[in-house]
View (cartoon, rainbow, N blue to C red):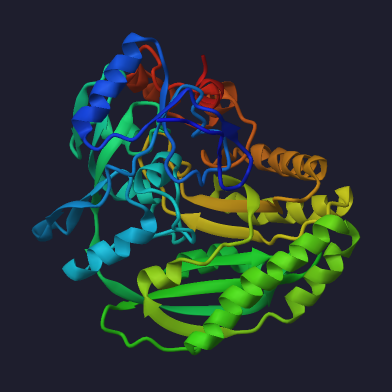
Amino acid sequence: MTTTTWRNWGRTAQCTPSRLIAPQSVDELAAAVQAAAERKETVKPAGAGHSFSEIAVAPGIQVSMTGLSGLLDVDAARSRVTLGAGTHLYEIPGLLEPHGLAMANLGDVDRQTISGATSTGTHGTGLKYGGISTQIRGLELVDGHGRVRTLGEDGPDLKAAALGLGALGVITSITLQCVDAFSMRAHEAPASADEAIGTFLDRVRTEDHYEFYWFPHTNCTLTKTNTRMPAHTEASGPSRLRRYIDDELLSNDLFGVLCGVSAQVPAVVPGINQVAGRVLSERTFTDRSDKVFISSRKVRFREMEYALPLEAVPEALRELRAMIDRRRHKVSFPVEVRAAAADDLMLSTASGREAGYIAVHRYHRDDPSASTTYFRDVEDIMIAHEGRPHWGKMHTRDADYLRGVYPRFDDFLTVRDAYDPDRTFANPYLRHVLGK
C-alpha cells in the first residue's frame, strides 16, 4: 500500500514507512513477516499512535492491525475473552456487555488498541489492581522468523510478552481475564495540594480507585475516588447536560482555548490556574464502570510519566512543586498522581513493587524549548527516586539506566533473542531502551 508520513497523536514522533501492509489474517501477516526477515527489512505495527514516545515508529514496514480485531472467543466458565490485537479499548465494553463481563481496571484514555496498550504498560489507578497487561492470560504472536506462536498462562515467556514493547513479535490476539460487569460511584472533590499529597498513601490503601490532579502554581487539587458497585446499581448524579457541560465544554473546549492563550502568553498561566483551581466543585455520580474510568481527552498534549516506589511519591511531589517555582516554569496542564499494585511481569513499571505514578503534561503548542526543559527537570527528580519511565510516554532513559531499575531486564533480553534474534522488530527507540 502507498505510504505517507505517519504522526502519533501527541505530534512527538513521525516517520515515513517504506511500505504499509494491512493483513486480513494471521497467515497473511506471518508470510509478510517471514518475507521481510529474509530481505532484512524491519516490521512494526502502529496501533492507534497514542504513545508519546517513539516506540511505534516504523522506518521499514508499518503494519495496520485493523484487519485483526474484534471479539474472537468467549470462555464464559472462566470469564475470559479473546480479542483481535487491533481492537480498540473503546470497543471492548460493548463487546463484553452482552456476556455480563467487564475489564477489571482501565486507564482514563481508551483510544489505544488492546495490543498497543498492553505492550506499552498502560494502567489505571487502584492499589489492588495491576496495569492492563496483568489481565492477559494468553496471546498469539508472529515472531521474527514469521512463525506463529501461542503463549499460555503457564508458560514463562508470557511474563515477557504480556508487556513486550513490540520487541518479541507482532501480537495477533490477546486473551483477557475479565470480571463480572460492575458499576462505580465516582466522587470528585477539591482539596489543597498539601492535604492531597499528605494523605495520598493512606487514600490509595483505603479506596478502590483513587487519584488526584494538582494544578501547578496553586495549592489546588481535584481528587477522584471511584468505588466499585454491583452491576445493577442505578445510574445517578448530574444530568447528561450537566456532565456534557463539565466534561466537554469546560474540560475540553474552554480548557483548549485557555491552553492556546497560555502558549502565546506564558505569563498568564499562573493566574489562569489560580482561577481554575478556585472554581473546582464537588460532584458524585454512578455509572457503568468504563464510563467512570474513561475521560474525554480532546486537547492535544505531550506527556511524561514515571513510576516510583509508592512511598517515594509524596516527597517527589514536594520536590516537583519546589522545582517548578525555582525554575519558573509555566505549566498549564495539571499533574496526575495515581497508584497500582505490584506485579511479576518482566518490564512492567510495577514489576516487583507497588507503584506510584506521577504524570506531567505540556500543551502540544507550548514553546518546544520550554517543554523540553520542563520534562528534563522533572525527569531529574524521578530518576533520583529510582523511577521507571512509562514505555509509551516521553523520557530519555537508555538500556544502562533501565537495567539498574528492572531486576529482570536481562531475562527479557534473553527471551527477545529467542523470538527475534535478527531484530526484525527493532526500531531506533528499542535500540535505545534495550541496547544495540
